[in-house]
Image 1 (cartoon, rainbow, N blue to C red):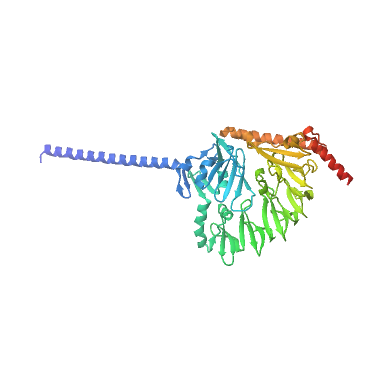
Image 2: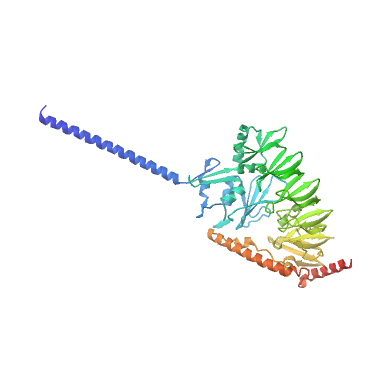
Length: 514
């Protein structure tokens, strides 16, 4: 081989090495680019929020959520209802309307009512025969955005019986409905050694508090409560157990007697009563029945009203148009109690404010075809009572606004608006006008104050102003009430109200003569 050929061969080899090096560098660059692209896509994917509903990704549901600057998450109530198995409607369940400032959602088991600007959600269990509503509170009020009602996720959890968890670190939202959780834990309880998970609707709610009402033995009716991990909370030895969602406690039954146990195994109410029913969760009161007599106890079993009465509470089904939600506490304070065929009234502290002397509470329409049954005039917090076939109005403190002299006190509905009337001595008086002129101040209509709010900021401002206004109004009412207490029986009526005053005086004269 000569020098020329050798030189040429060396150049070819060097050229091949350069090409190989270039190819290797190109491959490395391509791999690095691919890795960078994949990493970027993974990063982008990780920054996109994920939402799962009952284990399935749901982009449509995610798109309905609104994130506030303070971290609160809102969703449109009616639009989101169908995802949780509910139908949705305008207005209120008990009085159908198209009022846009109210809406309600309904499943086969329960109804939940929402109202603009309110933090109180009324719920009605359709699986029970009672017409009494329970209620829950939320930190954030219902608000409006572009004319649509929105609720916070806290409100959605309580209204729709769902579990809502937002993991900010993982940028993910996990939602479980109660039927899904019930089905999931049905198989779990078998592994824990129990026959079945109790399927009563109210007991299913315990799942949302990580508790399960279970049956150990069908023949012996051995009910107990366990945690979702199988740990025993209440031993399976009770004839029946009912979860109390408002307190998180359990109504337990054994040998035909009932009491209340806490999830920490504390006996809150001894198992000595024939029946216990929640009266009011705010007041922490229960109606207790023993030996066919009724009384009131608190959440610790202390007696507030002795168990010696024939009945407690009014049949509110007769007053469906009056929109009364609690048969046990009327006009926010009065507990109707029947003893020896007569009705009296106690306040929420257990003090008797009127001894049993009324034949009935409420007005039942009979001869007047336009009249509707009436129990309370809600905006004025007064209760209708009857004695010797004559009617009176009683305020929240238990004082009669006038003696029982009215022939009728009733309600009509015209154009969707309620009107209240007092009929006495062949004259018909507008009840609200009479109450206004005799020192009874109506409560502010919070719905009207807020119903035109359509944006987030405006709703919050309106709610804040509303609360301030209510406090100021409350102070004015207290001052007004104080001024009027000394003149409780000195009514200054105009010509329309003169008949009530005259009848009142006649009644007093008759009583003095007697």
